[in-house]
Image 1 (cartoon, protein in one colour):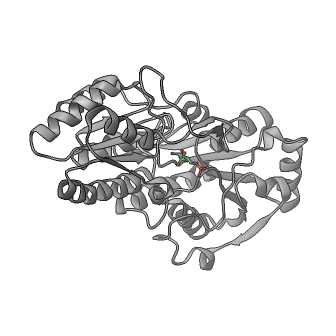
Image 2: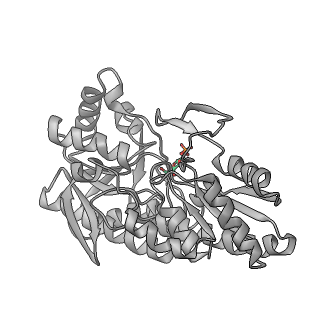
Length: 342
Ligand code: F6P
C-alpha cells in the first residue's frame, strides 16, 4: 500500500518527529511505501512529491520545521481542487493520506474524507494548543519553554533599570501560551484574547508592583484587546488566514503604561522564534506517539479520524470534532492565576 503524508499550515516543532514515526512504523511493521507531498495541500493539488523512506527520515527527530515544507494552500478554494487531488492521488497510486495540521488543514481533511471519500487520517499540530478534542498539541510545550526562558531573562534587565517589560507572545484567538509562560515565568500581569483587559487595571497592577520595589513583567497574547476598544491600530490588514491581523498590542500597551503611570516601559515581541528550532522532549514524545497511532489508523482503515491525547492515552476522534470549535482558556482558570497579578 502507498500512503501519502503532508504537513500544512504554520510550521511547528515536532512535525518531523511525526513524519519519522509514521514512516518507521509504516515501513517496518506494515510494509507500506510512502509519498511525501510538498508544501501542504499544494503537493497533492499539483502532484508535487518528495521521496519518503527510512533514509529520508534519518536524523530528523530533533529538527524543527518540516522536511516536507508547508503552506496555507486551501484546495477547497481552488477551481477543481478536489478533482485535481483525487486524480493526482490515483495517478500516484496513493491509497491513504496522513494530514498533519491545524484548524485549516484538518478542516480540509474532514471535508475530503466525509464528503468526497478521500481516505484521510488527521494529526493535530499547533503551538497555540487551541484545537479541541486533544488535551495538548505538540509544539505548544516548546513554545511555552521558549517564552518562559525569555521572561526569565527579561526579569533581570527589568530589575536593573526598574522598568516595565511587556512581552508579546503568539496566540491570536487563545491565550494558552501567555497563560502557561506567564505563570511559569512569574509574570505580574497576563493578558489573553478570551478576556478584554482594562488598561487602568493593568496600570494599577504595574504601580503596585513598583511600590513593592520590583519591576513588573506584563505578558500579553498577540490577540488580546483592551476593554474600551480605544486601541489605535498601526497596521490593520488581512493575514494569510484571511483574518484581520491586529498587530502591535504589546507596543501599544507599553506606550499606554508609560503615559498613564509615568514609568518607563519596553516591549519584546517574541514572534516566530516561538515556532522555530528543536522540539522539547515532551513534544518529541507526543509527536512520535501521534505518528505511530496515525499509521495504525491507516492500517485499520479507520479514515476521517484524528489522533488525540486524552490524559496519557492516544485516542481516535472524528477529525470534525477538532475543528468544530477552538479550545480557549476557561475563565475560571484565568481567574485562578489572577492571584499573582500586581
Ligand atoms: O497558528 C500558529 C501561529 O503561530 C499563531 O500563533 C500566529 O498568529 C500565526 O501562526 C502566525 O502565522 P504566520 O506565520 O502565517 O504569520
